[in-house]
Length: 154
Image (tube, rainbow, N blue to C red; front, top):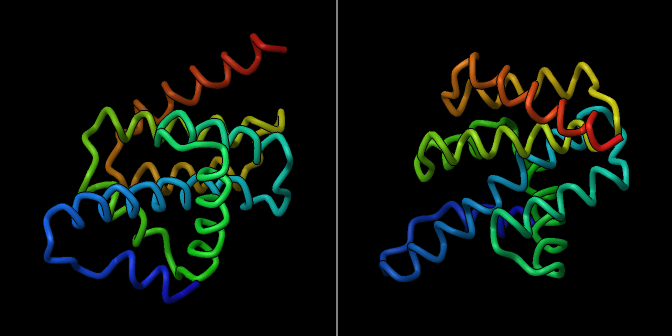
């Protein structure tokens, strides 16, 4: 799996392949950050898995099977990465501010999927938000918005 991770980050000269590779690496980076939130509390709950699957299908335009495969790749990439920087660098390179806000929303949705916000989940979302240059104001606004959505569904 390390070979796959290295391949994703290597440069490709063909423009069509570069666009396709950029989408793949961006999807992997997004999934890896979402996985980081899901596993940080040492309890990757079925509800978190379902929320993660749903987000990847909606945000990345993936099928159920593709999303499942991407989650496994993201778990492996996350386990083999020494920091969040590899993933957040790609987000910064390829996403505009609104897309970053959407990612932060997804991070909060994964964190709240099991009905509890763990302090480690909040901490890692804060770190990711800082690394992708989303303001603290937006960090808080999105948190409140997602929390309210979750509470209204109860």
